[in-house]
Image (cartoon, rainbow, N blue to C red):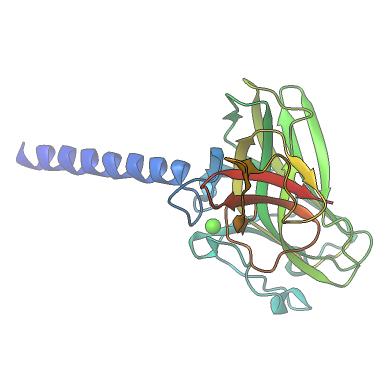
Length: 263
Ligand SMILES: [Ca+2]
C-alpha cells in the first residue's frame, strides 16, 4: 500500500511538472520577459511527438545537425534562439533516392485557434541549402478545408545557403475563431538540407508600411515625436543588423510598440 501511494505521489508530481513545462512553453516569448505582441501559440521543436512525417523523405525533430556526406555536413546547426532544445531537420543530402525525386512533409499535429484580433501572422527561423533549381521548400497553412502553399527562400540561388527569420502575414485567409495548422513541405532532386525552429503564431493590429526604420506614422506623444529605442524581428529577438526591407517590431521611448514593414 505504501509503495502504491508513493507511486501515485510520483505520478502526481510528474503530471504537475509536465503541465508546468507545457504552460511555460506556451507562454514563452523568446528571450523577453515583456511580450512585444500577443503570442497565440509557439513551438520550440523540443518535442518530436508534436509532429508527424507525411512524406517519404523523412524529417527528424532532434538536435541533429546535417550529416550528409557530400555537402550538407558542412552546414552546421540552425542559428535559432532555441537550437539547444531541438529543431526540425530534413537532410536531403543524407537521404539520396535512386530516381532523384525527394519529397518531405512534416505535419504539426496541434491545431491553433486564433482569437481576439483582426490580423494574424506566423514567424519561424529557417535554415536552408539548395543544391539546384529543382529544390524548393514551402510552408503549408491549413484553415478548415483550405490550404495555402507559401514558398520560402524563393530568391535563394542554387548552391547557396540562407539562415533567416521568416514572417508570413496570414490576415488575408485567417479570421478570429479559425482553427489553423502548419506543414513544412520540401521537394528536391538531391538538395542539401533544411532546418526549422521557433514557430510563433502572433496577433497584431494592421502593419504600418514605411520606407525607413525611423519613419513614423502618427508617432507623437504630448506633441513631441516618439523615438525608436529598440527593433526586434518577428520572433521577438533584438535586431542590430537591420536589413532595409522586412517586417519588424519597434519599441519607442514611451514603452509603446508598433509593427512595421519596411519597403
Ligand atoms: Ca528549438
